[in-house]
Every structure is written in C-alpha cells, then in structure tokens.
Image 1 (tube, rainbow, N blue to C red):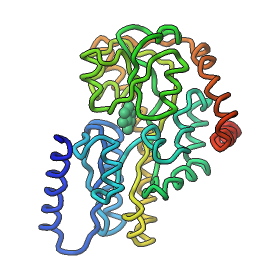
Image 2: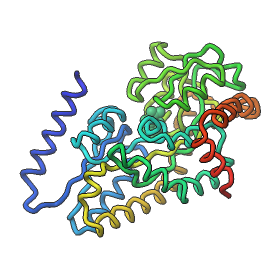
Image 3: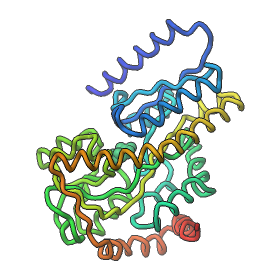
Image 4: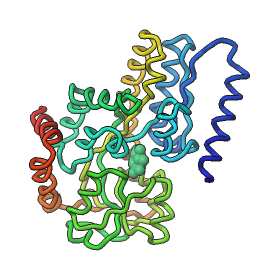
Length: 326
Ligand code: GCU
C-alpha cells in the first residue's frame, strides 16, 4: 500500500537521522498528526515540543510529523500501538473506537456553551477520560480546543430537513453516525485526507467540521455554504503510548504534562485568532456563512439521549455528570 511505504520511508529516515546525530541517549518521541503547519494545533504542539526540550535539558525531544506523513489518524494510532511511533494528535471522534468514554465529546448539543465545555474537559471528568485508554496501550496527555463543528455543502442547511437524503462524511465515530442518522442524513465514514476529492467528485454531498479545518484543508474551494448549526464540540486530543510514557522518568513525565498544559492554554488564543482569520479567508473565496435556528436540530437528536438512557447506563451516568458541571 502506498501509505505504508511512505510511512516506512519516513520512519527509517527518522531513525537514521537520530541515530547519526544523537551522541547521548536523549529520548525522541515521534508525534504524528493530520493537519498542516499553518493549523493552530501544529503551532501549539511546536511550542510544547520546544518547552519539553528546555524543561528536560534536551533529555526528551518531540519530533512532529504533520500532514498525515505517517498515515491517517487511524493508521497513526495503530503505529503507536505497535510501537513504531510514540505520540499522536487525534481527536475525540477517532478515539471513541479505542476508549468508549470519549463518546461524550461527540454527542450533539451536550455542552451548554464554551465555558461548560472547557470546565468538563479541563476538570475531573476530562482527566478520567484521558486516563481511560490505558488498557488500549496509550494515555491522553491533553486536549486542544477545536471549536464547534457545523455542516458544509453546496447549499445552506437551515433545518434538519435540508440534510434529508444527503451523503454526509463523518469521522469513524458511532456517535457521529447516530447523529447524522437522527438528523435524516446518510452518514459516510471517511478519512480526513480523502475528503477533498470525495466532495469534489460527489462521492459525498456534505461534511462537517470546524472553520479552520474547513478552510485550511481547502474544502472551502468545493463547498460554498458553511451553516453554523454548531452541533458538537469535539476536542483534539494528544495521546502517548503507555510504553513511551512509562519509560520516562517521573520528573520528565511532569515536564511533559506542564508543557502540554501550557500549550493547551496557548491553543485557546491561537484558536480564536485562527477561527476569525480562516472565516475571513473563506468568505473572500466566496463561502457564505449561514446561521440556522438550532431548535429543530436540538429536538431531532433527543432520541439519541433516550437511547443512551435505556441501553447504555455507563454513558448515561457520564452524561448526567457532565450536565451537572457548572
Ligand atoms: C478536525 C480534527 C482532526 C480530524 C478532523 C476530521 O480537523 O482536528 O483531528 O481528523 O477534524 O474531521 O477528520
């Protein structure tokens, strides 16, 4: 497969580079993600990598591979589980298949507003979820704000009716699939890197994401209406293999956490800036931003919560705890 060959070449290249230059045994953590260098999350993680190097006196280095050079998010997760790389910046939607508690971040209209969402992800519940994947061979280090996700396509989406019969690209998350079904669309899971062509060729009719990802991936060239229904707030998540994490000294683990939290805070400012800038850029390219009334969307997804209450007591209790957070 083309991707695995590319991945292998990059990994061998990296091994040779580090093998040749490291005179002492510094730990290098390879970090894969699927955004380009202009994306706010890349900048936040670059700041984290710099701080980790400083705090650990060069003992721990993070080398970032952007742009899905090492494969899609799913492939990167598998490479990390197999020990071929150490860290992945992914998101809660992708993680739902690995650790079910991440589902709460993929449920539509659960968070009342941004403050509620921040309090959940940065509080006790957020920490519990980051730790919940240990049995799958990795743990979460931090979350990065990734704003709210909305639908985009070649027409305005003002009510769920407008989504009827449309093939809508979703991430491979059972909650995202349920959401699109509840709204009357036809969910089509696809990797992020395949979406531009899929939209262009009509393999899918619509997609959903936040504004910076929509614009920086140039989906704005092929979808001219971005409808701000803001159905979910799905954080990006930085994860590390338990093998790599447990091999760090306790002090270096603390340095990693400090740098990660600082980059998470930095990301909030970078994100706000990026949302504004990328919206303006998309508008210049002829994208129209529509603000639908959200009531019908909120009502249409209620059966999802009824279903969780009857069939998934663990998830239901997590949802109730989240609702109780201020
Ligand atoms: C966001 C997120 C990515 C994810 C992408 C997607 O852009 O930052 O981690 O892959 O959504 O929709 O696939």
